[in-house]
Image (cartoon, rainbow, N blue to C red; front, side, top):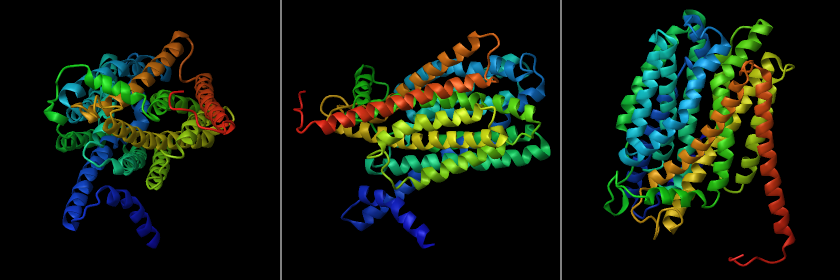
Length: 460
């Protein structure tokens, strides 16, 4: 119990520092308001992510016998490819909706698209309906980037790291519980009840999204929807502030790889399990991956990983994901090796996501205050929440472009699909090269710094 109390003190320390006030009554009031706001963010993240059906989507589609989606290869090429190709248009549309409607409205739209996706997956009578469900799923996931920005809009900058880790931890814990529930229900009643449960939680997510607080009023009375280039110019300047660009570059490759894996991993698992004549334990595997990710993410909340360890994470995250992909695709790994590698892959990505979100939010906030990211004079009427969302969307958009290019390469070969281990080994090689590149860059920069016995002038 003492250990739990110590952990709780460590988690709340950033809150106490950020909300420090000479008046104890005001400090308690602000602390309660902070806790209520963050609890609502955590609740939405948990409800939006509670999908016991997610690990069995391929099995469910196969069981329906829809023409054009009757094999793993057809599902990969005819159904899941729609999700990949519509992500970029969805991302751009959500960005502009966020500009004119605000992030809260986009979050609610995202939740509604998730609800429609599941409904069409259950009831869609043809391949076209399944493809439409994947298009809506792309809007659901694209709009969730707005939540990544919105969660920082009503809290103090000193608590960004804690908020990021708590919401990510709630999301991952929800995924863990839903995966266990999905495996349990599937063994007794099949896949259809899983989608009904998912549908119910997505409906609750829509209701909670409507209750979320929107971003604070724009500075200097600027109204949402004001036209002009200043918000996008501020986002462009923020992209080059501090560590933002390096985090963006890392995210492009990690995000693309993660999306491709989550979209197509069940296809590889289905092929491997069929060859080994083993039962489908995808639900338990997803649960283990999310549990491990949630534990590491929450345990890392008191640590300033975005500070001194940023370069280490930017190097090791692609390398860890590359090693995990190799383990998933290797013919020698077997079922246990494949599942264990998937857990490692998820942990590496999710912890990196939490650290990156907090780091970029802090950098954008600092840049806005100092005039580096928020327009002339430190903000100048530009909505900081939109600036942050635009920076996050830029990284996701570039990642989606890379993902679509990879999908196009795979589909350009008539006999190639994500059921082939060679595709996964190729992705592993690409991520490995990214990690090696970052490691070489930071090593060279460090060696150059040590060789200089003096400091260079600021204008060099």
